[in-house]
Image (cartoon, rainbow, N blue to C red; front, side):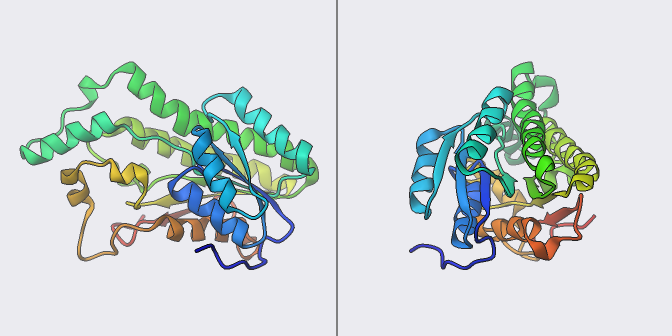
Length: 264
Protein backbone atom coordinates (compact mmCIF):
# COMPACT_ATOMS: atom_id res chain seq x y z
CA UNK A 1 0.00 0.00 0.00
CA UNK A 2 1.44 3.37 -1.02
CA UNK A 3 1.38 6.65 0.84
CA UNK A 4 -1.72 8.84 0.42
CA UNK A 5 -0.70 11.65 -1.92
CA UNK A 6 -1.09 15.21 -0.66
CA UNK A 7 0.42 18.48 -1.86
CA UNK A 8 2.55 20.02 0.87
CA UNK A 9 5.72 19.69 -1.25
CA UNK A 10 4.02 19.86 -4.65
CA UNK A 11 6.37 21.09 -7.37
CA UNK A 12 9.47 20.79 -5.17
CA UNK A 13 12.58 18.73 -5.82
CA UNK A 14 14.03 16.77 -2.90
CA UNK A 15 17.16 14.74 -2.33
CA UNK A 16 17.33 12.21 0.51
CA UNK A 17 20.54 10.47 1.52
CA UNK A 18 20.41 7.08 3.20
CA UNK A 19 17.18 6.56 1.28
CA UNK A 20 17.71 2.86 0.70
CA UNK A 21 16.38 1.92 4.13
CA UNK A 22 15.14 3.08 7.52
CA UNK A 23 14.54 6.76 8.19
CA UNK A 24 15.84 7.80 4.77
CA UNK A 25 13.48 5.46 2.91
CA UNK A 26 10.52 6.56 5.02
CA UNK A 27 11.39 10.20 4.38
CA UNK A 28 11.67 9.67 0.62
CA UNK A 29 8.24 7.99 0.58
CA UNK A 30 6.67 10.74 2.69
CA UNK A 31 8.11 13.51 0.50
CA UNK A 32 6.94 11.82 -2.69
CA UNK A 33 3.48 11.27 -1.21
CA UNK A 34 3.30 14.98 -0.47
CA UNK A 35 4.12 16.00 -4.02
CA UNK A 36 7.91 16.23 -4.22
CA UNK A 37 10.00 14.77 -7.01
CA UNK A 38 12.52 12.75 -5.01
CA UNK A 39 16.07 11.60 -5.63
CA UNK A 40 16.71 8.56 -3.42
CA UNK A 41 20.43 8.49 -2.65
CA UNK A 42 22.26 5.61 -0.99
CA UNK A 43 25.64 3.89 -1.00
CA UNK A 44 23.66 0.71 -1.74
CA UNK A 45 22.55 1.37 -5.30
CA UNK A 46 20.03 -1.49 -5.62
CA UNK A 47 18.30 -0.41 -2.39
CA UNK A 48 18.05 3.16 -3.65
CA UNK A 49 16.64 1.87 -6.94
CA UNK A 50 14.06 -0.26 -5.12
CA UNK A 51 12.80 2.71 -3.10
CA UNK A 52 12.82 5.04 -6.12
CA UNK A 53 10.64 2.59 -8.06
CA UNK A 54 7.96 2.95 -5.38
CA UNK A 55 7.81 6.71 -5.82
CA UNK A 56 5.88 8.69 -8.39
CA UNK A 57 8.65 10.17 -10.53
CA UNK A 58 11.34 8.82 -8.24
CA UNK A 59 15.03 8.80 -9.15
CA UNK A 60 17.93 6.83 -7.67
CA UNK A 61 21.59 7.77 -7.29
CA UNK A 62 24.39 5.65 -5.85
CA UNK A 63 26.50 7.84 -3.55
CA UNK A 64 28.92 7.30 -0.69
CA UNK A 65 28.52 10.49 1.37
CA UNK A 66 32.03 10.01 2.75
CA UNK A 67 33.36 10.75 -0.76
CA UNK A 68 33.02 14.48 -1.51
CA UNK A 69 33.35 14.07 -5.27
CA UNK A 70 30.42 11.63 -5.34
CA UNK A 71 28.28 14.00 -3.28
CA UNK A 72 29.08 16.99 -5.48
CA UNK A 73 28.30 15.04 -8.63
CA UNK A 74 24.95 13.89 -7.24
CA UNK A 75 23.84 17.44 -6.47
CA UNK A 76 25.06 18.64 -9.84
CA UNK A 77 23.10 15.82 -11.49
CA UNK A 78 19.88 16.84 -9.75
CA UNK A 79 20.23 20.44 -10.91
CA UNK A 80 21.26 19.39 -14.42
CA UNK A 81 18.18 17.20 -14.77
CA UNK A 82 15.54 19.28 -13.00
CA UNK A 83 17.04 22.75 -12.70
CA UNK A 84 16.53 23.14 -8.96
CA UNK A 85 16.75 21.58 -5.52
CA UNK A 86 14.39 22.66 -2.76
CA UNK A 87 14.73 20.10 0.05
CA UNK A 88 17.60 17.95 1.30
CA UNK A 89 17.22 15.39 4.07
CA UNK A 90 20.54 13.86 5.09
CA UNK A 91 19.76 10.55 6.77
CA UNK A 92 22.84 8.54 5.76
CA UNK A 93 24.87 7.22 8.67
CA UNK A 94 26.64 4.20 10.09
CA UNK A 95 27.02 2.49 13.45
CA UNK A 96 29.69 0.09 14.75
CA UNK A 97 28.34 -3.45 15.21
CA UNK A 98 31.58 -4.69 16.81
CA UNK A 99 31.49 -2.03 19.52
CA UNK A 100 27.82 -2.81 20.14
CA UNK A 101 28.72 -6.47 20.68
CA UNK A 102 31.39 -5.51 23.21
CA UNK A 103 28.90 -3.33 25.09
CA UNK A 104 26.30 -6.12 25.07
CA UNK A 105 28.82 -8.66 26.33
CA UNK A 106 29.64 -6.35 29.23
CA UNK A 107 25.94 -5.93 30.06
CA UNK A 108 25.40 -9.68 30.13
CA UNK A 109 28.46 -10.15 32.32
CA UNK A 110 27.40 -7.26 34.58
CA UNK A 111 30.68 -5.43 34.15
CA UNK A 112 31.61 -2.03 32.72
CA UNK A 113 32.20 -2.00 28.96
CA UNK A 114 35.80 -1.76 27.80
CA UNK A 115 35.75 -0.36 24.29
CA UNK A 116 37.87 2.76 23.92
CA UNK A 117 41.19 1.03 24.56
CA UNK A 118 40.26 -1.66 22.02
CA UNK A 119 38.90 0.69 19.39
CA UNK A 120 40.99 0.65 16.24
CA UNK A 121 41.85 3.64 14.10
CA UNK A 122 39.88 2.29 11.13
CA UNK A 123 36.69 1.85 13.19
CA UNK A 124 37.01 5.42 14.46
CA UNK A 125 37.72 6.83 11.01
CA UNK A 126 34.86 4.93 9.33
CA UNK A 127 32.24 6.31 11.73
CA UNK A 128 33.62 9.84 11.56
CA UNK A 129 34.02 9.82 7.77
CA UNK A 130 30.40 8.85 7.17
CA UNK A 131 28.59 10.54 10.06
CA UNK A 132 30.58 13.77 10.38
CA UNK A 133 32.52 14.25 7.15
CA UNK A 134 29.49 13.05 5.19
CA UNK A 135 27.31 15.68 6.85
CA UNK A 136 29.80 18.37 5.88
CA UNK A 137 29.92 17.15 2.29
CA UNK A 138 26.13 17.20 2.01
CA UNK A 139 25.70 20.60 3.69
CA UNK A 140 28.39 22.15 1.49
CA UNK A 141 26.88 20.73 -1.69
CA UNK A 142 23.40 21.84 -0.66
CA UNK A 143 24.53 25.42 -0.03
CA UNK A 144 26.34 25.57 -3.36
CA UNK A 145 23.05 24.77 -5.07
CA UNK A 146 20.55 26.55 -2.81
CA UNK A 147 22.29 29.77 -1.78
CA UNK A 148 22.38 31.29 -5.30
CA UNK A 149 18.60 30.77 -5.53
CA UNK A 150 18.08 32.25 -2.06
CA UNK A 151 15.83 29.43 -0.90
CA UNK A 152 15.92 25.85 0.37
CA UNK A 153 15.61 23.65 3.43
CA UNK A 154 18.10 21.10 4.73
CA UNK A 155 17.40 18.61 7.50
CA UNK A 156 20.19 16.51 8.99
CA UNK A 157 19.48 13.38 11.03
CA UNK A 158 21.53 13.36 14.19
CA UNK A 159 21.07 11.25 17.31
CA UNK A 160 20.04 11.52 20.93
CA UNK A 161 23.37 9.74 21.56
CA UNK A 162 25.01 13.13 21.16
CA UNK A 163 23.39 14.14 24.47
CA UNK A 164 22.95 10.89 26.44
CA UNK A 165 26.28 9.41 25.40
CA UNK A 166 26.47 5.62 25.52
CA UNK A 167 29.37 4.21 27.55
CA UNK A 168 31.61 2.34 25.15
CA UNK A 169 30.36 4.14 22.04
CA UNK A 170 32.63 7.21 21.89
CA UNK A 171 33.12 7.43 18.14
CA UNK A 172 29.39 7.34 17.38
CA UNK A 173 28.56 9.90 20.07
CA UNK A 174 31.36 12.19 18.92
CA UNK A 175 30.36 11.92 15.27
CA UNK A 176 26.75 12.85 16.00
CA UNK A 177 27.61 15.64 18.44
CA UNK A 178 29.94 17.03 15.79
CA UNK A 179 27.23 16.76 13.16
CA UNK A 180 24.83 18.67 15.41
CA UNK A 181 27.30 21.50 15.99
CA UNK A 182 28.25 21.54 12.32
CA UNK A 183 24.60 21.81 11.27
CA UNK A 184 23.94 24.62 13.73
CA UNK A 185 26.97 26.62 12.64
CA UNK A 186 26.04 26.20 8.97
CA UNK A 187 22.44 27.14 9.81
CA UNK A 188 23.50 30.51 11.19
CA UNK A 189 25.48 31.17 8.01
CA UNK A 190 22.96 29.77 5.54
CA UNK A 191 19.89 31.69 6.72
CA UNK A 192 21.41 34.91 5.35
CA UNK A 193 21.02 33.30 1.93
CA UNK A 194 17.45 32.09 2.49
CA UNK A 195 18.43 28.49 3.31
CA UNK A 196 17.19 26.89 6.54
CA UNK A 197 19.18 24.08 8.21
CA UNK A 198 17.78 22.06 11.11
CA UNK A 199 18.35 18.69 12.76
CA UNK A 200 16.20 15.88 14.10
CA UNK A 201 17.91 13.82 16.80
CA UNK A 202 16.15 10.45 17.10
CA UNK A 203 16.31 8.09 20.02
CA UNK A 204 15.94 4.33 19.48
CA UNK A 205 14.21 3.76 16.14
CA UNK A 206 13.18 0.52 14.42
CA UNK A 207 15.59 0.53 11.49
CA UNK A 208 17.94 -2.02 9.98
CA UNK A 209 20.64 -0.56 12.19
CA UNK A 210 18.51 -1.22 15.26
CA UNK A 211 17.77 -4.74 14.06
CA UNK A 212 21.50 -5.47 14.20
CA UNK A 213 21.73 -4.24 17.80
CA UNK A 214 22.41 -7.15 20.18
CA UNK A 215 19.44 -8.23 22.28
CA UNK A 216 21.04 -7.26 25.59
CA UNK A 217 21.68 -3.75 24.35
CA UNK A 218 18.17 -3.40 22.93
CA UNK A 219 16.77 -4.39 26.33
CA UNK A 220 18.86 -1.63 27.86
CA UNK A 221 17.14 0.93 25.63
CA UNK A 222 13.66 -0.38 26.47
CA UNK A 223 11.77 1.36 29.24
CA UNK A 224 8.06 0.78 29.94
CA UNK A 225 7.73 4.30 31.32
CA UNK A 226 8.37 5.91 27.92
CA UNK A 227 7.27 5.32 24.34
CA UNK A 228 8.67 2.25 22.60
CA UNK A 229 11.15 2.44 19.74
CA UNK A 230 10.03 5.03 17.18
CA UNK A 231 9.08 3.97 13.69
CA UNK A 232 11.05 5.40 10.76
CA UNK A 233 7.85 7.08 9.63
CA UNK A 234 7.53 8.98 12.91
CA UNK A 235 11.03 10.39 12.51
CA UNK A 236 10.36 11.11 8.84
CA UNK A 237 7.32 13.18 9.82
CA UNK A 238 9.54 15.37 12.00
CA UNK A 239 12.03 15.77 9.15
CA UNK A 240 9.22 16.86 6.83
CA UNK A 241 7.95 19.34 9.41
CA UNK A 242 11.44 20.87 9.62
CA UNK A 243 11.67 21.02 5.82
CA UNK A 244 8.24 22.60 5.39
CA UNK A 245 6.87 26.11 5.58
CA UNK A 246 5.30 25.46 9.00
CA UNK A 247 8.85 25.51 10.40
CA UNK A 248 9.80 28.78 8.69
CA UNK A 249 11.09 30.29 11.94
CA UNK A 250 13.17 27.28 12.95
CA UNK A 251 16.85 27.76 12.13
CA UNK A 252 19.59 25.67 13.72
CA UNK A 253 17.11 23.70 15.81
CA UNK A 254 17.96 20.24 17.11
CA UNK A 255 14.66 18.49 17.81
CA UNK A 256 15.10 15.65 20.27
CA UNK A 257 12.80 12.78 19.29
CA UNK A 258 13.48 10.06 21.85
CA UNK A 259 10.04 9.21 23.22
CA UNK A 260 10.67 10.81 26.61
CA UNK A 261 13.83 8.91 27.58
CA UNK A 262 15.47 12.17 28.65
CA UNK A 263 15.26 15.90 27.99
CA UNK A 264 17.93 18.53 27.47
